[in-house]
Image (cartoon, rainbow, N blue to C red; front, side, top):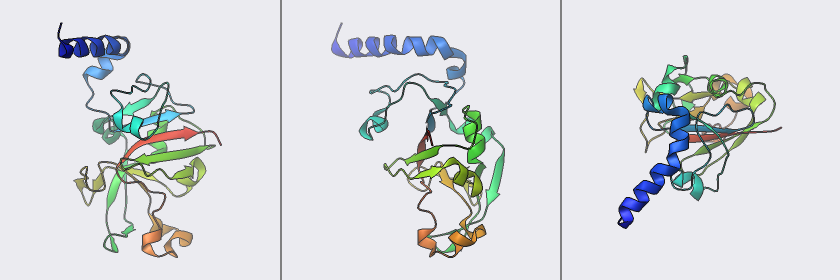
Length: 193
């Protein structure tokens, strides 16, 4: 057996317990775009894997279980549309996607206590209370002005809210309203309060 065959066989054997446990769900899913970990999550995938989860490894993440969403799973949740003024051109734009609360619920997370560490692909990870995320009406945006958001832009997922609707945020300069809104969102860690 050469080195390549050995690696493929080893990785296949390591994945077998996860595949056997959730084979039907995995057969219908695309690649995971958003992984939710932490308190209250009802897992649909196994633990952190240092080979499969390279970006998470480089960002020092680890977990024993998680709920993973592909784009279709996020898109199946009821969508809402917000129209905030964005800092990039100081113009209003339509952003649509499911409420963050609905994404958390789909992952098994209930209640309004605790905090959310929302991590972007570049490692940016603001922490917001679940109560504030609910109060500000955060969404997980999938579309900008009617088009899916690409990786390399603001997407494919962006945790964002309509800052214009809240006097405390609208009073700030536009480039300071979205500090808690990671674009390129790929991980949410639900933490105890």
